[in-house]
Each structure stands twice: as C-alpha cells, then as structure tokens.
Length: 91
Image 1 (tube, helix red, strand yellow):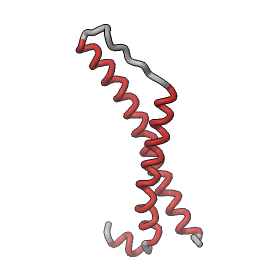
Image 2 (spheres, helix red, strand yellow):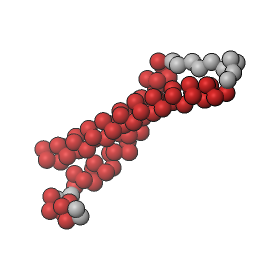
Image 3 (cartoon, helix red, strand yellow):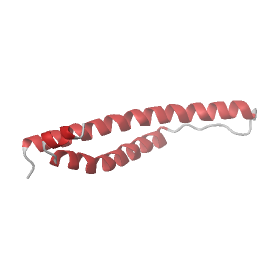
Image 4 (cartoon, one colour):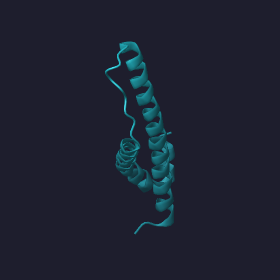
C-alpha cells in the first residue's frame, strides 16, 4: 500500500498535470475560436458560418484532462519511488 509520502507526491504531480491540462484546454479553445474567426474574415465568404457548441467544448475538456492524467501517471509514479537524495542528485 502507499504510505503518506508517496501519496502526497503522486497527488502533487497529478494536480500540477491537471492544472496544466486545464489551462491548455482554455488556451486551445480560445485559439480555435480566433483561428476560425480570422480564417472566415480573410476568406470573405458568407457560405460558411461557424457553430460553437457547448457540448463539443465540454467533451474536448474531458478528453484533454483524461489524456493529461494518463500521461502524468507514469512520471508521477516514478517520482514517488525516488528517494529525496537521488532526486536532488539530478538537479
């Protein structure tokens, strides 16, 4: 079973991963909207109209957070297994 120190390290690293993924989801959403608007502005066409859907945005955030969490599990596990002196040796 995990002792307290290992559990704290895992939670800390996975928390940082989730925060970074949440921020990247927000930045990606803003970039997507700006790219579509500027793209349509330069095309000068009335045929295409963008459709922004909240459902798609929520699904995107779920996927981003899931991929980030899965990608952060292995490094978090590896970091929790290192001793403090061994971890500082590489700094």
